[in-house]
Amino acid sequence: MKTVYVAVAAVAALAAAVPAAAQDHRVAYGDLTLSNPAHAAEFESRVRREARRACVGGTPVQQLDCTVRFRAAAVAQLPASARQAYAAARDEGPVILARAPAGFGGL
Image (cartoon, rainbow, N blue to C red):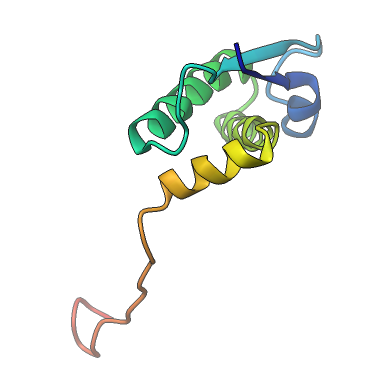
């Protein structure tokens, strides 16, 4: 089975949100087609679930930082083709930024 291993010691050392003991956390993705948006969402869910197990202790900000770094590490460990498929499946289209007209909504 294809699995991403995230070494929490490397991630957590920066965030200081987990105990000092190094732990590896697995996120399986072999049963998923990451180009499928539903499967990409399932991978994201698995990463979030494992990050919650890994990023304990510390302040809420440290936990959030650890979670963000955990996700980045998990995605970075995907093979390039899987990472590209995952990114394409997560793409929700272009982001359009616009400024509200003067006087509208207090701006």
